[in-house]
Every structure is written in C-alpha cells, then in structure tokens.
Amino acid sequence: MTSPPQSAACELHADPFGERLPQPLAVHKQLLGGRFRFESNSQALLHLVEAAYGDVPPHRLPLVAPELRIELRLVPGRHLQDADEPPPVQMQSGMELLLGVIDAANYAVISPRQRQALIVASEDMLAFPYHLRYELIEFAVYVLATRCLGLVPLHGACVGREGRGVLLLGGSGAGKTTLALHGLLHGLEFLSEDAVFVQPESMLATAVTNYVHVKSDALHFVDNEHARRWIGESPVIRRRSGVEKFEVDVRSGHGQLAATPLRLVGAVFVSSEMANDPAALLQPIPRHETAVRLDADQAYAVGQPGWLPFRHKLVEMGMYELRRGAHPRASVEAVGELLDRIGC
Image (tube, rainbow, N blue to C red; front, side, top):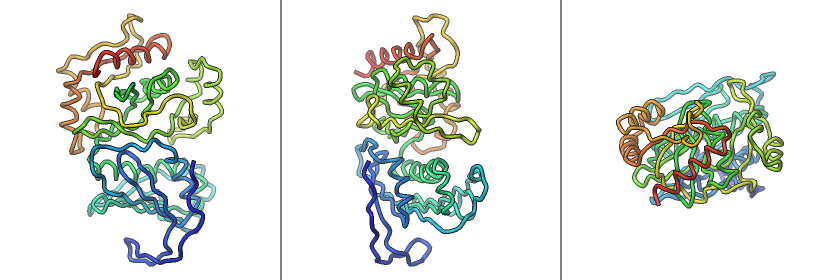
C-alpha cells in the first residue's frame, strides 16, 4: 500500500464552518466509479483511509464523475474512557444534510448537494479503528457515492466471471458471505460480500473490494490449508451484535478480484435450506414473484431514485433461488454454470 504524504503545508483554508485551519494532508482514491479526495490534519486518520481503500481496484463507470471531498478532523480529548466500544451511531437528517453521531466529538456530517463530508473523531476514537472506519468513514463514502453518482445501494454480495456478474441476495445468515468467499477461492471474480452499488443505466456493479468477514466455523469448509491459515491468521473484529469474525483482506493475492465493474446478468437469492436434489441446487423464480421479493429484500434501496429502472432490468434478466449443497463448493459450481450460460 502507498503511504500518505509525510508533511503538511502551512497554508490556511476556510472550512464549511468558517474556521481557519492549516492546509490538510490529502490522498486521492478512485472508488465506486468516483474520485474521492480525503483531507486530514492527522496522519493516523489517513492511515485508516489507506487501510480501507489502498490497492482497491480503481473502478470507473461510463459517466463524468465529480470529485467528492471528505475531510477527516482529529480533535483532542478523551470522550470514550473505559468503554469497551463506542456508543451506537445515531442517524439524523435535515437541511439537506445527513448525520451519523456517536457523541459530541465523534460524528459525520454529509452534504450530498455540496459533494462533501466532514468527519470528526477524538483522539481516543483511534483505539476503535473498526468502528471509525465502518461507521463514520465508510458511511460518508457510501452516502456520497449513492447520492452524487446515482448508484443503487444493495445489501448483498457479487461474484462474476470475465466481466459478467451475478448478485447474491438473501437475509442475514443465508450464506452470501460463505458463497462469495468460496467463489474467490475457486476461481470466480470477487466483487463484494456485503455491499454492492449498481449504476441502473448500464447495470454495472461496483463495490469497495477490500475485505470479507468470516466466522470461525466457516473454516471447516475451507479445504486448502494455505487458505485456511490465511483466514485464521487475519485480525478479528467484533460486530455490535457481539458476533466476532475474521476480517480477511482479499487484496493480499488469494484469488481474483474484479478489476473493473461487473456487468450484471442475473441475481440469485441464497437460501439457508438444504436442496432436496443435490444435482439441482439452482431453480428459477417465477417472474411474477421476483419484484416482490426484491422489494422485500432491499428495503433501503427501494427508496432510491434509480430503484425502479434497476428492478425492471433485473427482473427481465431472470432470478434464481440457490439452496445449499453438501459443501459450499457445490454452490460455487452452480453459480459458475449460471454465468456460463447467460449473458455471454
């Protein structure tokens, strides 16, 4: 990974609140089809940006994207003393602003209209890099990409082959992450295990291809000893639900990442139920059911401007239900066969 610049200029600039601050350090990232500029008064905060977005495939979409600016400001003080984790994020909106607030010294303010965001973090918040990355920095990146680039945000995974992609949808615990992980390990292009963003005009899917989060019990199905060790030696993060997972960095060279956005050719609802017929894991969903299932599965995306054209195109492509086989590799083979026969 490249390191942020090592020194800051002394020139002053005005921020959205009218203050005069030293000219910050800055790094640029090509993410989700957009150009992001991250500015900060703190090397530590920019190192978190590098941890999240360094060496991520620089996806571009067929549009002229404006530059999106995120300022990360470290403030002195200890506001989280003796806390096992920061307080939950509270979401607020108004006056064309979106806010994610942990406490008075840790929050994100996002202005899609101005194509910029301000993230403020206290010094002791650096002890919680997972929460800082996902609940403040990632929140700002995803909101700006969705609102400013016209993308449809989906809770799901995506894998592909030769530039064509299949969405993996379904409820929590259905097996989307396991399928995406084994797709990565068995030759499919990996895009994302959790969040996918689609340009509805082109049906190109993009994501931040950096991590896959794996429970320890998933290691039982990883046959390759080298891959099992790679996963098992990864850092462990703890969700707010209390669930602990390995945070596995997919940029480390194990498997093929989607170097460009994947052109969607279909979608699969992943089911936690075992298949009655091991030779027929994948079954088409009747077309009259697909729109209803999509709306129910993607409650947040339904309210986005591009949802209806996206949903119409996906329904026209066709959707499938995938039930479990004896081993996740069987599911990967079923998805691979689907990619081979559609969208060529």
